[in-house]
Length: 401
Image (cartoon, rainbow, N blue to C red; front, top):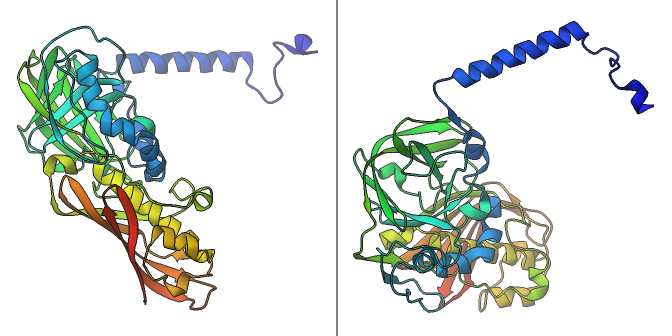
C-alpha cells in the first residue's frame, strides 16, 4: 500500500505548481543568506542555553571538582611537555604553583584543555575547553565550536559562567590585555568594546582576529538571567609562548558535608530539590585570582547541599540526621515536622573568605511554613562554617516576618 501511494498528493497539500514555487522561493532565500556580508556565529542558542544554568551546578561540581582542582591547568602544562611536572597541593588546599612554559612539543597524551586564558588586570588564569555545555562550563571557559579559535581570522567566542572565571569582566577597560596561551604561541588581545545584550542576540563574525567573552548579566546572579555581558577584544600581537616561569593558582576541592547516606539518597542538591537562587556576594579579603576561579562556587555548592539536607532532616523530623550536619546546633522548631517550606524570596548567598580559603557561607531567604507546631512566615538565616575540609551548619535562625 505504501508503494502504491508514493507520490500521491496528500489531501489539502500544495499542488505541483505551488510546490515548485515554494522550492524556488526557498532557493532564493538560501542565495540571499550566502550573500550576507556578516556571518552569524551560532552563539544565539548558546547564549540562551549555555551560561548561568545554576540548577546543574551542584551536581556538576561534585562530579568534576577533582578535575578542576588537580588537572585542568596543570595537566595542560604536563601533557604538552611544557617544563617539569607541576607539584600538586594537599587535599582541600589552594596554592600558587610554578611551572615552566616554552617547550613547544607534541603532547604525550590527549588533554581536553586547548589553551589558557589569562586576563592580567583581573588575575584570571582559566583553562579553555571546546564546547558550551554545562559539563564544560562547570569547570572551564568554553569555546563556541561554531566560531574560530583565537588567533585565526574571525571572531572567537569564549563563554563562562557568571560568578566564576568571568565574574569581573565588566571591570575591563578599553586597552586592557587578554592573553590566549597555547603550547607554541601566545596571542595578545586588547579590549575594544563591551555591551549588554538580550539572551539569544547574535554574535557577529569579523574579518580580523578578534575575541568575544560572554557571560550572564548581572555577574552576581545565581539564576538564569535574561541578559548577557559581552567583552570584545582585538588581536594586537602574537609571540612564541614564553620560556619564563609562570605562577598558576590551583583550585581547591569542594568541602564535604557529612550528610547521612539515607538522607543523601533522597537527593540534597539543586538537581533534585527546587530552591530559587538569588545573588552571590564574596566578602572578606579573598585573593583576587582565587575569587575568579570555580573555587568560591564549589564552596557555595557545598553550603547549598547542607541547607537542603537541613531542611529535609527537619521536615522529616529526623533529628539524628540534623545533628550529623549541624553538630551542637539547636533545631529551629518551626521546621521540625512541618511540610516543605514555600520560598517567598530567592536565596541570597554571602561567602566569607580570607586569601585563598573560604571561612563560612550565609544563606538568607523568606519562607512560608505550614504544618508543624509553629506555622507562619519567617525570615530565615542559615550559617555554615568550614573546618579543614568539612562544611557543617553552625546556626539556623528563623524570625517572624
